[in-house]
Each structure stands twice: as C-alpha cells, then as structure tokens.
Length: 270
Length: 368
Image (cartoon, rainbow over all chains, first blue to last red; front, side, top):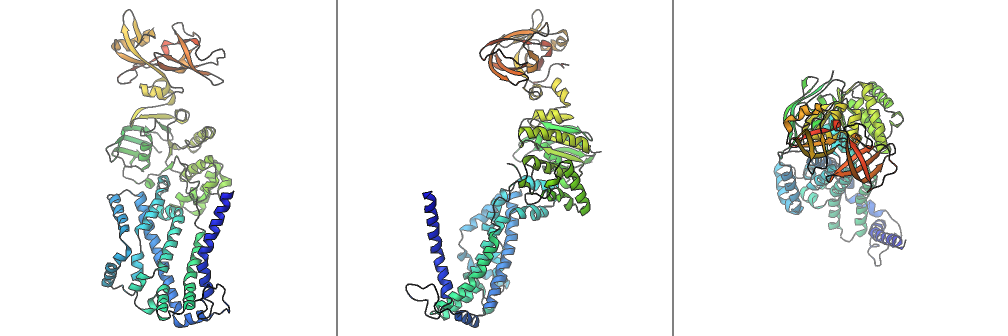
C-alpha cells in the first residue's frame, strides 16, 4: 500500500512540475507588457487582458501561417503513414531477394544526424525547383526508417495465418493490406501519426531553411520572427505559443483514444 | 464432382530441406480424407500445397482434373480452416463469414442468405454481431468453419482445426465436422496428428512419415493390415508392442527373441510367408488388446511378467511390464487384485502377431 501511495505522490509531483511552464505560458499570454518578467513568477494575470492576442493577429499573418502548418502537417502525416505502412508491412511479411540487406541499409541510415543531410537535401530540392514550396516540406517527410521499423515490428506480430486466410478468401495483395493489415495496425498507425503530426507541426529548422517567403512560413517559423523583432515581449511570445500549441493538443486528445491495446484479441489462438 | 489428385508431389525448401517426397494419392469426390503423421512429417505442407499457399517443387496437383500448380489460392475454389482459427479480429462474425463473398462481389442479399444459412448449420445465429474476442474457442472454430462453408468451395481443407480445443470440445467438434461432411456432401481433406481423430473421421487415411506417404487406406485396413512397422505403431491406442528376434528352423519354424525370453512356433498359414526369412532378424508386433489374462486359444504363449505400472480406466485396465527390458503394454479387463511389483500370467495369441522385417520395417505377411 505504502508503495502505491509513494508512487502516486511521485507521479503527482512530476505532473505538476510538467504542467507549471504550461500554466505560466497560458497565464502570461493574458498579461500586459512587462507583467510576466517578474520574480517570483506570477501565474494568474492581474489585470486580465487579451491585448497580446490582438497584437499577435495584427502583426503576424497568423491565419496564413496556421493553415500552412495545418496543411503541411496533415499532408505529411497522411502520406507518411501510407508509405511507411506499406513498406513496414512488406518488410515484415513478404519474402523477396535482398530484403535483409535493404532493411539493414535503411536501419544504418539512422545513425546519420538529420542536420548533416540538410545541405545536400536543400541542394537536391533546389535543383528540383521545390524550394519555397510545400513540396520542400512534404517530400523529405514522406517516409523514414523509424516509422518503417515500428510498423514492421508490429506487423511481424500479426499471424501469417490471417494473411493466408484472406488470400484463401480471394483477397488481392492490396486488399489484404487495406482490409486486414491496416485495420489491425491502427494502434501503431495512430501512434506514428501523432509523432509525425507533432514533428511536422513543431519543426522549426527545416521549414526555416526551405521556406523563404513570409506567406509560406509555418507557425513556429513565424513565431521565431516575432521574437527577433520583439525580444522584450514575453507576453506576446506566450500568446503566439498558445496559438501554436493548442491545435496540437486537440489533435493528440482526438487520437489518443485509439491507443488501445488488445485489438488482436480473439483473432487466433497461439 | 471435385476430386483432388497428387502426382509425385515434392517440396524442397530453399535450404535443400526435403519435406515432402513423391506424394501420390487421390481424394475422390465427396470423400473425407485425413492426412496423419507425427509432427514434422510433411502433412501440413502437403495440405498447404493443395491450398496454393506453398509452391510445389516438383510434381502435379489436379483439382477436378485441372492442373492447379500455378493457380493462386483464390482461383482454386477451395476453402481452408486454420489451426489457430485466423479470424479477422476487427470484423464481426457476420463480416468474417461474408468477407470472401464480398471480395467476389456477390450480391448483398445472397451474402445475407448464405451467411445466415451457415450460421444456422453451426448454431451461430445469435453471435453474428459479436467480434471474435467475445466468443469461446469452440465458437471461434465454428466461425472459421462457417467462413469456409459460405463460399461453397469444391474442396474443404482443415489444418489441425481441433488441436486448440479442450478434450471434451474436441470430441464434440469432431462429430460436428463429420456430420457437416455428410450434410454438405463436400470433398474434405483434414490434417491431424491425432490418430483417434483420423480413425474416427476419415473415409480413408493417408499416413505420412518424414515426408513420405506410407499407406493410404481405410481406417480398419490400416489397423488390420499395416504395411510397415511405423503404420502399425502409429495406428492404435495404446500403441503396438514391438520386440526384435530371429526366425529359426530347427525342428519347426520358431521365433526367438534376442535374449530368448519369448519363443513360439508359427501357424501353418504364417509359415507359408516366413520360409524365406529363416535366420533373419525380424520384429514382432503385438497389439495391447491381443494380450490377455485368460487363455483364449490353446496355442497361446504363456508369459509370466512383473507389473511396472497399472492404469485402471474403469472399463478396462492398462498394465505395463517388460520383456527383455522392452516396455510392453496390455489392455485387459478391469483387474482389482493386482499390485505394482506383483507377478501375473499373460497370454499372447501367436496367430494375432504381426511380423516386420527389421531392416526395412515392412510387414512380412498380411494378418487377416
């Protein structure tokens, strides 16, 4: 019992610590200029104001940046899930020549830091004429070995007999993927979708490099520009952060119910 | 009409591992054939080759007279029931059964009729909206059978469908599948490692060992006329007892076991077969049910034995003893006044003995 209480106490403390900056961000975004930069920090705005949001929407083209982020994150996520799930399924369940070699080659690419690939990637996309277009963000995000690996591991746990049963039922390879594998892989697909959506939404460096026009900026890039011009405005910055973070939280809450285990139960008896 | 014909079918895996060698047999229309053998004997591989899930290394498979070697499973018009059920977990019972028909773009009304018909046969009507995880093992297996029935295939394939069920349910499902076979009048090929299932369900049985088909025959013929020592030992429970020895011809044709603990003379009918085996090594086989505690035949050999283990089954008793350090088992009527370590006189009827060539394992004469 004591162990349980200690555990809960520990979890409560850590969650409060995690939440503090978040609550402060929310509070500060509703303060007047200069009110947030005090010590000890204040959490409740007094007096309460939405002036920072007004300034934010006046100075920045928030809606444009917001839609840039939304469209890019959604497109990247949809395409990423499509390609990685196909590849992961193929690596898990198909027998073809060079499969092991190809997979290991892809895995070994994980040791290359993404920063190293930025310059060649930029030059590549530039020669393709995609710099300062959505494609510059979408193409590098189409697939990665992390997602392929995760889906492959998950698909390995799907019994072969399910695929064979579908084959006996007359399903084509694509129908097996679409009607048997995808529905079964929902938990892992949702997990990856959250990763991909958050990653693209929050990504700063690559959009900063690849997008050069104000109207193409995603929210984090636009927000950073705000910081350069208004270093003394933490309240305005926090308002911008709230606008950036809220859609992500909504997306996460909407998807988290699919984080359910036991979807395979009852299919086969081991 | 839907026959299945295998001609010299061989399966060699990539590493050169030969799992099925020259399998030849024919499954007649509406016949229930059981493939049986110990694990690793190639029976499941054979079934999977018929299904089209496994490529054939050499040989030919015909379904309904049509060569199917290169046809994908969906074009062979067969259905298969898997050992682990292989139900789609995200679909309801109805959807599981309808999946194959939907893919074939069968009319919705027709799907509904066929699924409900199958559900009725299998008593699954009230479970049609449930997901597999809400069903018991027996119900899941019935759904798997239902998924096969609705397709109305030419041939049904079963891959050890009952091995995951508990003993009682297994007996029940066994009779249900037999009933279903008669009801549907379909050709069925059934794989199992359980000889009881094979004996009770099959019209004919194909016995395999190490990838080789040993014998194809009716259950009773396999029991009475096994072609070799393996078949004799595999069919029948408890298994046949074996003892090696030599045939000699001093005054009469005689069998003497290696350490001379067991000797007996042959009947005149047996002698006809055995002349050429004089002074050769042989193995005798005695079914546990042919050893008795009463002298039923004047020629019976009396053997005094020490009881090692006694297994009272209620209606009969299994007793274990040794002859020349070889474990023997006898199936006798219920005994009440015996103890482990005690001595008992047993009688073996020499006319019911099987004789096998020690080197090849082949049966030396047809005991009828």
